[in-house]
Length: 121
Length: 121
DNA sequence: ATAAAGTATGAAGTATACTACACACTTTGT
DNA sequence: ACAAAGTGTGTAGTATACTTCATACTTTAT
Image (cartoon, rainbow over all chains, first blue to last red):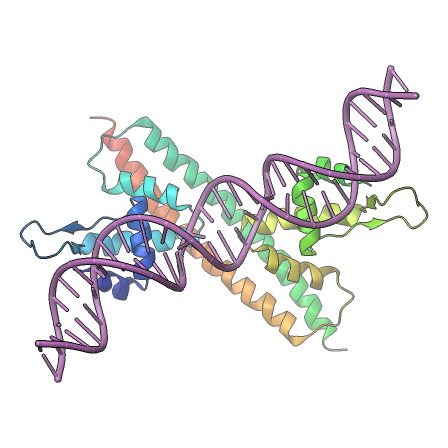
């Protein structure tokens, strides 16, 4: 499929998709048989990748980090020890983040309660 | 205390503290009695604020959002309905974020397991 | 006394993640 | 046939959050 379909199905703008492609997060290939243009074709896998990117971004992985992860996910590359370490690190970072979020949530809930009390006077 | 003490006690650089001050997140005041200089004095509260900023940043509040929250926390300002809504919104955003983090964590754990399998061949 | 270290301010530079624009070419609809 | 819409490439601009630099004055240590 062409880039606009990826954009429509993922909700990510064409400009952003091209930006991701430049960074190496996704890749489309121009059909060798078609010589009239150099339009790139993206396959279903790209949709999945973009969804992963969206998810990972929401929890604040940088695009550089996401790129690394996707390379491991989809790479035919060899499995290195460093890759396992990357994932181990990321998993514990996520645990820390969840803890902090819960802390902040409590804080916010307390302030909210105070605000609600205040608005009843 | 002077800015360098805030920096030392919070681990946030002087440059960043000044940046926060420009954005209105913290504030120091020049002592009226001292006319030889315009050094600003920061009190204990600033330490707490900086710690809150650090915590909130870790869970990806923008400085603009953090500023709003600090204003409500420490503001003598009136309690508006909008403030309660801000906190309600933020709390549900945090819940969403926690859910996503758990999703991603599972994903990463699965990939890690696969990597570990691979490294045993 | 004087050099080193600290402080204030303003402006410019960096990194990340986009967004917008210009230009050229291709495909599609009527 | 031809205008509208889509595609590729490259460059520039925007926003956020800093960091660095330059300048000038103040305090502190020796």
